[in-house]
Structure formats: structure tokens, C-alpha cells
Image (cartoon, rainbow, N blue to C red; front, side, top):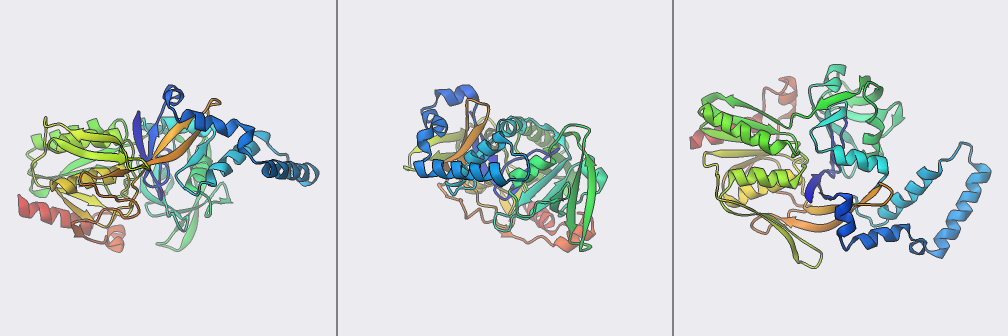
Length: 407
């Protein structure tokens, strides 16, 4: 089983790929895994009519009668049934416990493989205001069409999405390769709305990008934690070391997470033998514990860049580095997503995702709704960053200064 960290205020739309609500930790299970777990009987209860109370059944029948008599448009029976189950999960009052239709679940299972069909942007959603912001535009159709970092998505195909959950918005943007989608964005730099038509196509998610800065300081940006990321990251570190790297900066800003296994593999490469992260169920029982070996360890000066969109796997990585004293965290407080979800596939190809545990840093810190405080708190000078097209980055410069002093 793989634990997938997904987002609560942040979603990944990489070639229109959804990574959940910022910091949503999910255990990705196959159908065989689901059938073998003792919790599967609970899931199957959702298909048992005894779960729905008599009064609710009668109310649904009354509503259907009103629909049959008065509803102007054609109704879709499957959509209504899916809506019932979605509402059932919403009744848990947990934004991370949700229902996936068969189509949505199939897309979810493909989301962490590194290549997708879509437009090529990373977005986040504010949990309170529902505002969906583009936090990164990758090389691909969205960039070519003119979508920019910090654009706010307000409409898809002319329909207002400002109050919709990011899951629903992602589904609207998704589509077949070669088809077009119109996305309306509000751009604060000019105070105007922009209708942008983007042709969907396959986009490879560049989860790791790296370069050598001045004074032999290595810089690695990790945008997501996917199946390909750990190997890409380790390759990047080793290549920088061959180039004579004297210190390293790892940029996890706007990284909403991904696969926990990937974060663990990267931490194993960076840290000495010991505990990396562990989870507890609602009874306080430790349900899983991940440790590093003593095979490899990074010992050069290290700084980690984080911000309010650094969530889940990013927080696991940053939290372990901080607890071990292996590096300096620079930026702003992380998102604070410290709970774990498990995906339970159902017989018809759909699935439900339920919150099942909390995770803790090596020192036992509960970061849920708290986040991780950087060692050096630095607010990004957004205006300078935007006006310089990213060249003036005061958070990065602070990290460079820290590494320079330690070299």
C-alpha cells in the first residue's frame, strides 16, 4: 500500500491532474487490498438500504415525485445516485472524506504516475474562501495559452466555479486529448478577467528541477512527490555533488504533497538511521512507522524553503529535516495537514476516501491545523518577485545567505 498525500487547500492540476485538497494524506489501495481489509464490510454497508433511514427514504421518494412532475430538464439517474452517496460522505463533516465515481477514481489512480492529459498547471484552493489560485504553470498548453502564476480561476466553460470544491473544478477542466477548454481567470496585476482557451494534451510533470547557483550552492525545486520523484531527486543531488556542490537548497514551496513512500525514500537518502514519520489511529495506537537506514546521509549545509502551500509529504520531509537538525527551514508556516486518508475501492469501480489516522514527525509533533514553523521566517516580497519574473526572490536569497555562512 502507498500513502498518498493530497491537498486541502491545494490541488494539483498537472496536465489537469487532481491531487486532492491541500495536504490530504491518502492510502492508495488496489481492489484486492480493499477486499482483504476488515474495514471493507463497513464500506459495503453504503449499498445496504438499511443504512438509509425510513424518513429519508420517504423524503427521497417525495422529492423524486416532485422532480418527475416539475423538473424542466432531463434528469440522469446515475448522477442522482452518485449525488446521494456524495452527500452521505459530506455528512461526516470532514472535507477529506469523499466519494469518487468510477470515472473519478480511475483518474485518481493515474494521478501519481507523472504524465497526464490536461493543461499543465498546479493550483490551490483556500479552504475558507474556496478561491482557486494557480500557484505554478508548467511548460505546456496553459503557459502557451497565457495562463500565469497567481491567476485566480473563476469560470470554466463560462460557468462560475468560485464557490465549487476543487474536485469539481478539476473534473470540469479535464477532458480528452486534443479537445479545448475555456478557463476564465482573474489577474490581480491588471484587475481584469481573462477568457483563455487551452487545448488539452499530454503533459509530463517535471517534479524535480535543479541547477547550480553561485558559490557552488545547489538548488533543487520539488513540485510534487510522485512515483518518479525520489529517483529524480537523488539523481539531482548526486549530479550536483559531481559538480562540486558545497551546500544545498531544497525548494518545497507550493508543493502540496504526493506519495509518502516517495518522501520516505528521499529522507532515507538525506538522514541517518532513525524514525522518519509515524501514524496513530483514533485510539492512539501506532498504525505505521517509517524509518531510515544508515546507508546514505547528506552532511553538507542544507536549507529547505517552505510556505503556506507546503503540505503533507512536504511537511513530512521538512518536519523530519527539522527534527534531526539536518537543515534550516526558511519561509513561512506550512499548511498544517497532519491526517491520513485511506482509499476504499467499491465493487462498481467507484471508491470512498476516509480519514483514518494522524501522522507525526519523528519527535512526535502533531502538525495538524498547526503546520511547521520555519527556523527563519521570511515573507515573500510578492511584488518584487512578480515584477522580476521570479528573479528577485527574497526567501531564496535568505536561504543562499544561510548556506553561504555555513560553507
